[in-house]
Amino acid sequence: FAHVMTLAGRALRFPVDAKDVEEKGKDAKTRTGASKKRRRDDADDDETQRDSSLFSGSDAFSLNLWSLKYRTDTRPLLENCACHTCAHHTRAYVHHLLQCREMTASVLLDAHNQFHFLRFFAAAREA
Image (tube, rainbow, N blue to C red):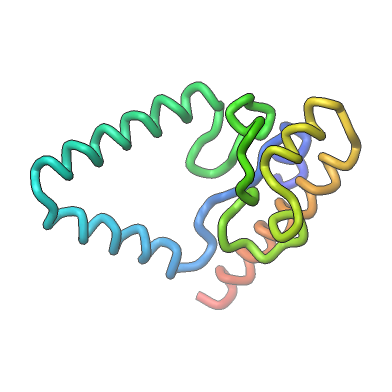
């Protein structure tokens, strides 16, 4: 699965640890106490993010790095990921490598995807 995602130019990003899921839940709980205006702003942000994901081809589990959206994105593939790719390279760089059909893009994406996939199964074994 991880290599198939690499061949498609996608970086895995689904939550691995239970604490990742809990943090999202805490964010949702703190937003429930916000004012109506803030809730409306959050809803607008959610709609913008949803529209953005429609155009980028990304989903809740992976980033489509072929998308032009990542042409100037200087963030790592996944925040708080300890893999070599995320530590040393940006989304824009991997996007550039994909566009140029460089073999390095597959190497970097495969390193990230395998690392993320193995972390997921290590967390499943601990659970």
